[in-house]
Length: 165
Image 1 (tube, rainbow, N blue to C red):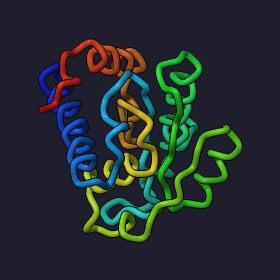
Image 2 (cartoon, rainbow, N blue to C red):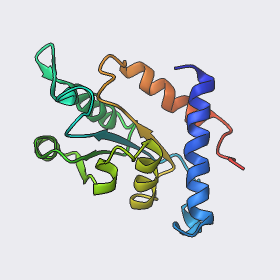
Image 3 (cartoon, rainbow, N blue to C red):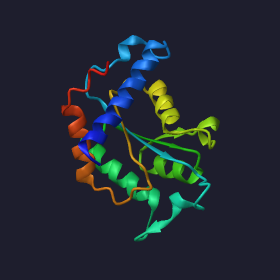
Image 4 (tube, rainbow, N blue to C red):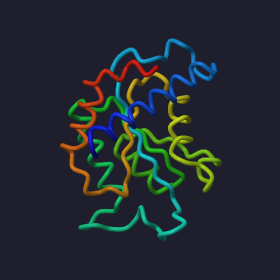
């Protein structure tokens, strides 16, 4: 992912948070104040196009296990303050419990085909407004390298994009 795209994604996240504050869905004290970073991983139980896609195996591990292991490792290094998994799957919720990962039960609307990534992000910001950076990992990107994730977060923290007016 190029730096320009990373900055655009960061800007979109921050503008959405500002919009929520301005519309009074979030108190004003939840504006950008630091670099508290949380990782959110959305995992739907059912896929419309590819049957059981998040449960497919790669090298003996399920797709979701690969991404969650990376997130756990990065949390242990201090990159993420917390890791959240937004899912409607009991199997994945149980896996989260066994790995001490925070599970967010998927809301009905967010299970629908009408929901998109912005809806998810808005939901997370409303539920967890204490974070400044909302990183999102996808289980459908199992070859994403740890160094790429670390580099992305470092660039977001080092940019002047805290001012998102």
